[in-house]
Each structure stands twice: as C-alpha cells, then as structure tokens.
Length: 499
Image (cartoon, rainbow, N blue to C red; front, side):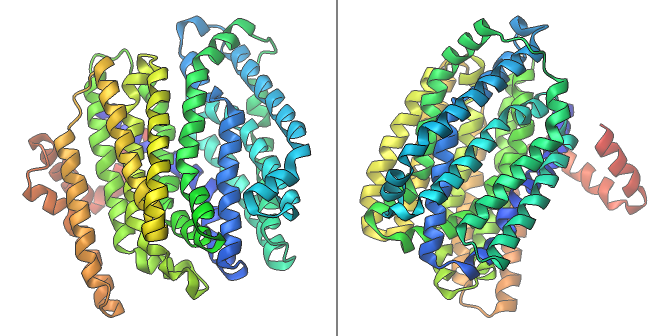
C-alpha cells in the first residue's frame, strides 16, 4: 500500500504541473480582469463560467466515467482502441448537434441569463469554447488511464502559452472585453488538440462498438442525471445571487470564489487525476479497503493544510489580486468556500464504494437531494446575509452531500474510514482560522508573521490530540532525518522519482 501511495504522490505532482498549466492562465489573469472589468462585468464573466460548466455537463453525458469503468473491464480486452474511437466519435457527434441546435436560441439565452439580448455573440463564444473542451475530454481521460502524466503536462503547457498570449493581446491591447477571454480559450484548446493528435490517432482502431456504447450509455444515464444536478448544485450560488441580488453581488462573489477555488484547481484536481485510475486498479487488491480508508485521511490532511493557509491569508490574497477597492470584501466568503471544497473532496473519495459496486443510481439520488437542499438554503441565507449566505449554503450542502454519500456507500461496500481523525482535522483547522480573525487588525509584518506561525502549529496541535499513529510518527521521523541530510538530497530526489 505504501508503494501505491508513493506512486500516487509522484503522479499527483506531475499532474499538478499539467493542471497548473491548464488553470494558471485564469489565475494569473485575475489582476488583469479586476483592472479592466467592473465588479458587475466580473459578474457577467462569473455567470458565463458557470453556464459553461452546465453546457459541458449536459452534453458530456458523463461518458468519460463509463470509459474509465469499461477500459479496465474484462469484456473490453482487445477492444480498447476501438472503444476509444467509439466514445470519441460519439462525443464529437453530440458536440456538433449541440452547437447547431443551440444557434437559434442564443438571444433568448442571453436575455434570460444576462438580462439583455446584446450578449448573444458572447454566449456563442462561450458555447464554442465549452464544446471544444468537451471534445478533448476523451484523449485527456486516456492519458490518465495509460498513466502518461508527462504528455499531459506538455499538452497543457502548450495550451497555457497560447491561451495566455491570446487573452492578454485581446483584453489588454485590443480592449475586446470578456470576448477576448474566450478567444484565448478557443485558441488554447486548438493548441492542446494539436499536441495530442498523434497520440489520439495512435490509440484508435476505426471500428464502432455499438453494443459496448449501448451498455456504456445505460451505465451513464444515472451518472449523467447526477452530474447535471451536481453542476447545478455548484452553480446555484451565482444563479441565486443574480436572481435575489444584482450583477455586482455576483461579481464580488465570483471573484472571491475564483481565488478560494484555486485549492480545488491546483491541488484537488491534480490529485484526482492520479487517484481515479488507481482506485479502479486497486478494486481486486487484497488490502484495497485499507488503502481507500488511508487515502481519505491523508488526502484530507494535505488539503486542510493548504486550505487553512488560504483561509488564514484570505484578506491578504484578496487585496493582492484586486486592482479596485470594491473587490476587497470578497475574502469574507473564503472559509465557507474552502470547507465546501474539502467536503466535496471527501465526498468524491467516499463515492468509491458506490462506483466499485456500480450503484450509480444512489449517486443520482444523493445529488438531487443535495441540490434541492441548496436551493432552499440559498433562498433563505442569501436574503439574510447576501454573498456570505450563498457561501454558507454551499458549505452546508456539501457537508450533507458527503454524509449522504458516505451512508449509502458504507451500506453496499463498507470501508473502515477514520472519521474521528478526519473530524479532528476539520475542527482544529476551524479553530485556528477563528484565531486568525483576531490577528487581522495588526500591522502588516506582525500580522503576516503571526498567521504563518498559526499554520505551522497546525500539525503540532494535531499531535497534542494524538492524531498520529505510532507507525506514522516513525515514518515522519525517518523522513525528517532523511531529508535533513543535504548531502544525500540529490540521491533522495532520484529515488523519489524512480520508485
């Protein structure tokens, strides 16, 4: 199991480079956006971004999930290349139909979403960008299944360079507004596809597997429904803020969410790229349940360290990237968004039992219930406390989502998760964040120093509460001695990469 965890760490780091390349453009460009866009215009961008997620979820049909499941299925032996061709061709067909079928409704969607028909061309660009990214999902998935993180990283780096260059050109020099962002995304996707063209064709056999596709679509149906509901759950906050507030409320929330969501973008997405193939490959291993249990504990531990840092320094992060003072108050939503991300990550790991046992219908039910709960909470909490109400609603909903998923998964595929240790991680993190609020009025240097100390104290406070097992303490001491030996640093790095 330890060897698998080391492999997971290495591949997560490499996938992290690729994910960094994919998302770095949006992150680096935040100061450019806050300088050139008003809070209301940032709200328009926020609504378009969540609408793009809806488009990808709806027309993606959750096919990548079925491809993950069938790729390792015994019935797919000797058919992997033709299976890849089948799902890719089918997805392209869906994308073409979706684009031309949507064209007559662009003005209506623009009016419904942004209160004006004048954004129809912006909606069209968003649609093109989203559908292009959807076509790239299958080759992206195959990279993960074949465990080729370096090629993944190369393709994403090329995408970053093209996307960043084109976006800066159109937004900064041509003053093209939000449309310039989508020009960059479209060009970046084309560059990504160009890098993977040879890999894609090499792994295809041009034979259409009708029967396998039929089985995959049947498998996908509940996943598709739950996937759409899950996306709606994730975007309810911005749609609800637009309905109950105004575009400036959406913009301020979207700015804070975009910053806090870097925890998801740069850490969780990277680890998930490595985890998902490993979870299915470990299905028949003798110690698989222990591996899944430890995975949740260590994953939560690592996520909380980074999440705590973002919460504690939320005020400084918000002001660092904002070029207008009206963006500064966005840090108030940080703790709720960070904890909603943590609960979402825990939910994904807890879904393992349902996925392995093919109980996908249960996943759909939990998503729909959580979505309905989130709608109710949004309607209540946004009216009471505005943006913070939307963020609090998201956190409470994801907490319930995790609890429901864990309950049903344990009934069909019990895994000995270490829930007491996980609860300790969450409570100590919340306590330290509360302490950090008292530090905010201090001057810059003492404030930054004290907040840094709080984060460093996190693992030591856990030790006071007997969080670590004896074998873990031994590993920590051994690792400490090993990496403090600077004379062996190069050799240790080589062993880490090769293992």
